[in-house]
Length: 111
Image: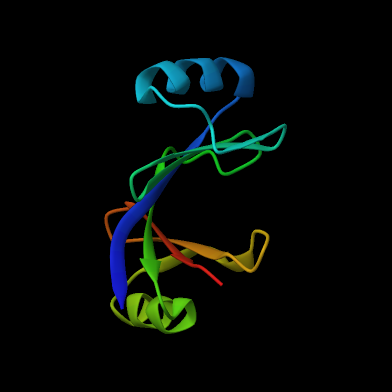
């Protein structure tokens, strides 16, 4: 099952400046605040700031129940792998693909 896009991660170069800007934009305090990641939860949406992540722009992550199965189906439909499935902590797994036009597609599976 696909729950849709519930997570958007922005790559940032200056985490402190990005945190100040997104704090004002979103109007809430971060729910995750570490030197390696800052995250905000608004309803069922998660906005993350990643100073050590990819550099291809913001990535919208589709929440899925079966990340390997979803990735296989997308590859069979013509997607290309940008980043294979990896655990990013606590059993949360992500993968990044791109479609035929080069658009980035993130998928994530919670533990």
